[in-house]
Length: 89
Image (cartoon, rainbow, N blue to C red; front, side, top):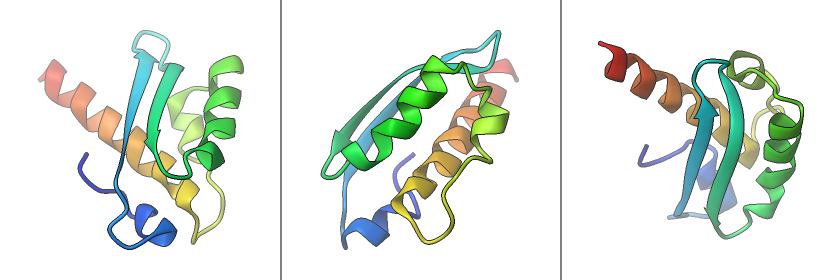
């Protein structure tokens, strides 16, 4: 994914990088790497999702109200789903 809608709320031209590690069999998050200014605001959600073995379909709906940078989770989960569907096609 090249851009996330919530990123422009942080700063114009904001850039960063996120990588998800997912247990595809159980559809749960095993880990997250985030690089970019202000990512500490997003790490608490990742820690809870990993520790609680939250299914991605549930995580997608556990997003803070708009407008917020944490909307990135909506786009990360959607990008993962698209990539997984393409690799199984």
